[in-house]
Image 1 (cartoon, rainbow, N blue to C red):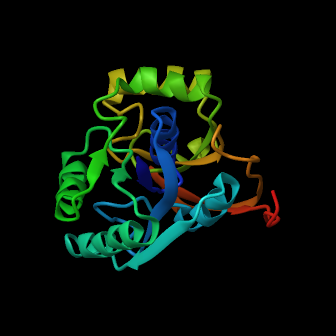
Image 2: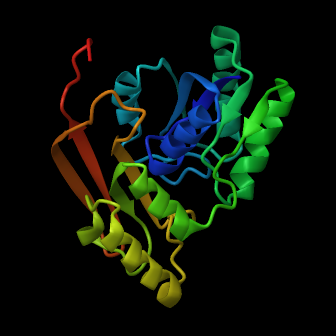
Length: 228
């Protein structure tokens, strides 16, 4: 029942970790892939390096693997990270936050099969609106760190996922086919607090960049003392 979570710092991987623990698994480590390719097919990129601070407040070790982010080749780097997690922490399960991406889920499953690991996807095919409501109910504090689809713009950066957010993305789904959970890459998120954190993370400053309907926000967090 020892598990490693493929961790991006966004809502999906955090909530998947939360559900995994609720199911009785032991969270032994996080695995984060730092991709140089901002258009990575597999991996979340906005604020990815801040997963180190999330790991600290989760009091979990984190395995970090850098990748150039070339299609398919980046999977070899993921494979190396998973192999390390198995050898170092004796994990038997890999947890993902995949919701609908067959591309991601199938490739991770293939790696798990190679190492005789179970692949657990607790969010698979979850109703997106109900999912957002569950995040709010479970006291997840989540902000938007990137938007990449019309009509989303700079004004969405830093917004928290709350009831007003759910209402708006529901309308955007009906009008523009925007996936309410951002599964199509329409937006990216970062978790500042959740039940797995010993203390909330605080943003001290941020920097935005982009144009039209493609924007991202790089955040700087308050330093965390070693003893939480």
